[in-house]
Image (cartoon, rainbow, N blue to C red; front, side, top):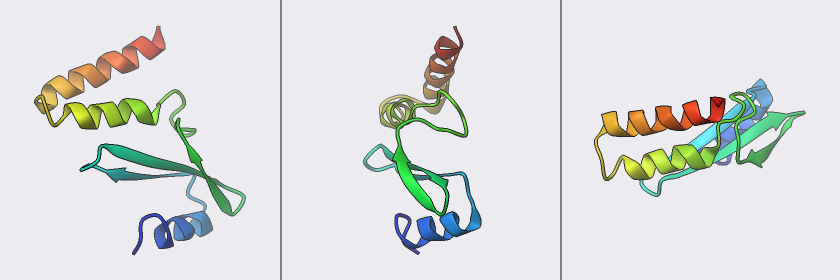
Length: 84
């Protein structure tokens, strides 16, 4: 199944609220909000308010250069900054 075509259409039909396609190799996340039998591309999660796709993409990029625990610590610090 095609992630950006067939699967997205299926998720629209099933009423899934949000759908992300993660391209690990290119450190890119394509996210869609799904509503009213259609979808639109988003830059920030509507299911997880305040979660920007750019933060997750940066975490993917960092995971190529530093170990996973450092990436996790960086990501956690980003979430904590959002709360303050």
